[in-house]
Length: 159
Image (cartoon, rainbow, N blue to C red; front, side, top):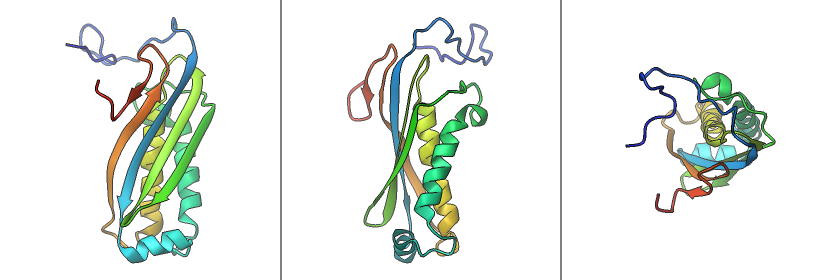
């Protein structure tokens, strides 16, 4: 059985030592979606919601969150990210968020991509809650990662 990397031999939590690792190019892509009522979806698509341009606000919130992941998630390393992108796709009853984080470094950026996607979704909720309080955040997951000793991993490929 694989042991959890954030636990030492005695089972105590610790930050993983990446000091001896060589920097490599790393990238991660995460996604999630928010389902909502048709009137909320229209307002977000048109930028006519009560709080203004929700997509622009959510994009900035996601990028800012990725940059602060080390402060938000215990034991995550603070990272100097090279790039963060947050994009939106309108679906039939939802908006899908896709977030990408990249750097050249000693540890992966999966948590940064997941944090960016999740905070962008939360921001969309906040921006549209006056229209629809029953919105549902769902399907948040890592889609793809590359770099480091484990190489390339994809959600759709067998482990």
